[in-house]
Each structure stands twice: as C-alpha cells, then as structure tokens.
Image (cartoon, rainbow, N blue to C red; front, side, top):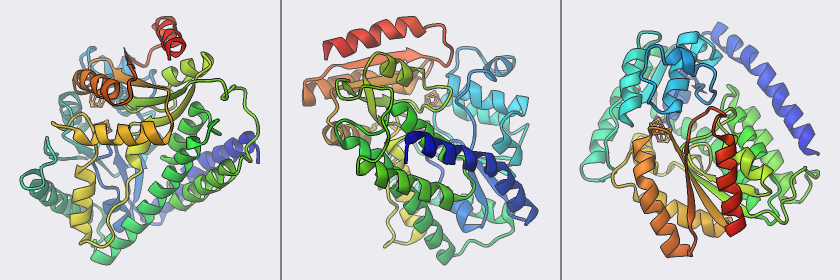
Length: 380
Ligand code: SF4
Ligand code: SF4
C-alpha cells in the first residue's frame, strides 16, 4: 500500500464521518465534545455516547474570536472559541454538551463565554499531581462528571461499562502509539506532517473501530518497510522531536518548515502525539484508574510538571532524535516559562540545545521561522 492509498482511505472515512454521527444521533445516542487531554473520554463511551474532539487548529476563525476575546491570547484558545461563535466546527454543532477543564487561565475564562453557545461542564482540574492531596480532589471531580454525563445521556454508567470503555480507549491509544513508534526506525517511514495528519483526522472519527484498524494497518505496513517513497529525503535529514503545545492540521507550519529545510520530524511529544500514548490500568477500580492516569498527563499547566521531563528523556532516546524543537503558542505562559527548564534539562542530559520557537497560527513569520530552523538543523 502506498502512502497515497492510505490517505485516500482516511479521506473516505473522514467523508463518511458526518453521516456516521448523524446516524448515531438519529438512533438516540448523545455526542460529547472534548477540548483537552485531561478529560476522560471513557465516561462518554461508557454512557454509549460519542466522544468527539473539537476544532481549534485553524487560523481563519480567530478574527471572529478577537471581536470578543483579547487579541493577546493563545491562538488555540481563540481558534477554538472562533469555531464556536462562527458555527464552523461540525463536531461542536453535533455536541450535546462540551467537557472542558480548568487548565490555563485563558482557557478556563474562555469556557465561561463558550457556555453561552453550548452547554459546557468544566472539570475543576488540580494544579499539581500530588497523590495525597490532588488525586482525591480529582477523583471526586470525576464522580461529579460521571453524574453529569448520566443526566445528560439518560444512561447509567456501570462498572462494566467503564471497563469496556477503558478497554476500547486503551486499544485506540495503543494503535496510536504503534503508529507513532514506526518512526523509531531510521530512516523514519512516516514524514511528520503525514503522521500528524493521520493522528489528527483519526481523532475526529466517531467510529473508533475504523480509526483503530486503519492505524494498526499503517503501523504494520510501515514497520515492514512497505510504504511507498515520499518526496522527503529522510535519510540525510536530521531527526527532530517536536515538544510543547498541541499542533494539528492548520497549525502545523513548523513541521512543514522543518521538512522543507530537509529535516524529519520523527516524533511529537505533545497532546497531538505521545501524550495520548498512555494506558489506563485495567486491574484497578475503573474510576480510580481513570483519575490516576488522566491526572498524570504531563502538561505545563501542572506545577511541577516532572512527567514531561521523563517522557522527553525516554522519547529522545527511543526515537534517536538529533534535535528538539520546543514550540510555544504566543501568550501561552506555562509552556513559555517551562521552555527554559526543558532546554537546560536536554542540554544536561543529551548535550543538545533545543530550538525554542514562539509563534501563532498566522503565516506572517514563516520566513523568520525558516531562517531559525535552517540554522538549527545546520548546527546539529
Ligand atoms: S496542552 Fe495541556 S491544556 Fe492543552 S490540551 Fe494538552 S493537556 Fe490540555
Ligand atoms: S497552548 Fe498554552 S495557553 Fe494555549 S490553551 Fe494550551 S496551555 Fe493554554
């Protein structure tokens, strides 16, 4: 199978997706929209609802958002809000309720305004991952979340239902991980922009089984060297690990510039990539297991955020990265401040400097970014 065939299959699934959601809704199933990796999607699955990722990676709705939100806010927040106010995200439209989290200041305040457009439940996320203090609070918060979903969907969430949902979502995360791990090979079989597009589009599919089987198939073929050639000369390209803020189709300019400069983005240490590669413990009580696993998500909104350093160490080694680009969206204070410690850690551990880039979704700084990225690749 060639990469073009894979992308055609994915496009076909994407085209069928809206009809899949409409059919499910007409059969009485609810749709629940999600913005953040801290919200356990298993709760929706256990209530026989469809969990959908919501849009937030394109620049075009930002102008509409800026009529209400301040301009000096992270583009991810403005894009998410812009999609909602312009009613241009079909998944937002289909959602019966939005589940959000108190992560960064901009996002949690934006959700107050978002609730004017759609029923929104905001999970009160602790600011650290302490097992003695934060975890019990989060466990109680998930119990309230369970009640909200039961009331909204009219479905009682049982222990067995939660176990089944964890099993399904673990399979999806394992398929994502297997797909991402093919790029541990050298040369990496999947260009970063292509890998990102697959992970991104699969995230919107209502039928989880379709996405799982496609990712498993691509991983098996790519792992056996069966993918057709691409336009990127990955053999000579430096292997880059991208860390920092989430990226997706429409907010992937840095990935594209790296590739145009002859580098290969082999891995993503962010919410679009490896942060979704975890497994929820199936031996524990399901609510306890969900609380523990989701709270441990290594995002910069946690203080401290030690898990990110551990994950980076593991990934730089496993993906044989030559360099690390740390991406921060403009006005994202948490990732921006953390960039210093990340650079220091990677220099001390691997003797590598990072390239810290701060940008937004617009194309206006593309040439400046290109100069810096080319200089970094040259220096590695
Ligand atoms: S980067 Fe942090 S706040 Fe943003 S989606 Fe990921 S976990 Fe949530
Ligand atoms: S990128 Fe930063 S500012 Fe933007 S939503 Fe995520 S944590 Fe908040």
